Length: 283
Ligand SMILES: Nc1ncnc2c1ncn2[C@@H]1O[C@H](COP(=O)(O)OP(=O)(O)OP(=O)(O)O)[C@@H](O)[C@H]1O
Ligand SMILES: [Mg+2]
Image 1 (cartoon, helix red, strand yellow):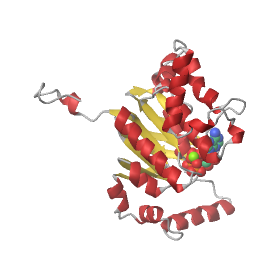
Image 2 (cartoon, helix red, strand yellow; image 1 turned 60 degrees about the vertical axis):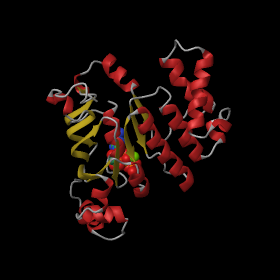
Image 3 (tube, rainbow, N blue to C red; image 1 turned 45 degrees about the vertical axis):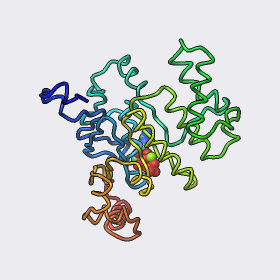
Image 4 (cartoon, rainbow, N blue to C red; image 1 turned 60 degrees about the horizontal axis):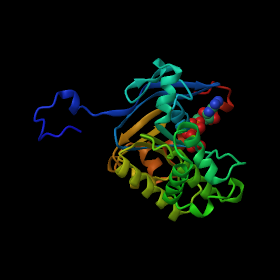
């Protein structure tokens, strides 16, 4: 951020919003399914962007594009201003190391303790660290997610919610500049969910990281989001602040936000089901 006191007339480029993540008209078909059909949004530096949408709409697929695990059929994904499709493997790897990714599945290694799981990225990517420093960093992150008591346990010995928190500690162990959380509060009790929400907010405030959080929990979205994007039928159909989304006039957005069982979304889905039963190609 340029201080206006020391530089009263900064060049316009410095005033332009800085985007850490940009998706421009991204299309992706997987098998027969057109999953993303023109997804566009940007994440500003230091903001928490919440992505919501029905199950199976492509939220996880979208996150995978941002770390370069999937490439768009059409359109462009930029991270820190770099078009990922133009980068060589080495540069892509460097960018990936600046991104913490909490996978929806957690993906802990079963034959390692929680402490070893969390230390692993440090051994791999910070070989210069002394063992004592590695352990200090691991304990710092375990404290953050309230998991110090489970450090010596194996993943099979802890609950689903604890696995989630351990995976979260691992995804932030390299102090990333971008954090992608794929459903960080699913399967957690409401108190622990709220603790994770606080953690997401604290991480943004303390470290100034840019974050995308995928969640089905609208309450959580309102607590953590600077902006919310709603993915539906392969596109972001609504994007705005929590207030914008809460007061949105579109009936589709309203049904989603209010979690109503009947409405335009149900009708669209039923129509698709009927079309599929009649042998029409999947849209
Ligand atoms: N590697 C893949 N190959 C084929 N199809 C895939 C692949 N990954 C995802 N899909 C399909 O793409 C669609 C979107 O999947 P995705 O996992 O992104 O959904 P989601 O929005 O994250 O859902 P949920 O809220 O249930 O996690 C689904 O129909 C899924 O089956
Ligand atoms: Mg998902």
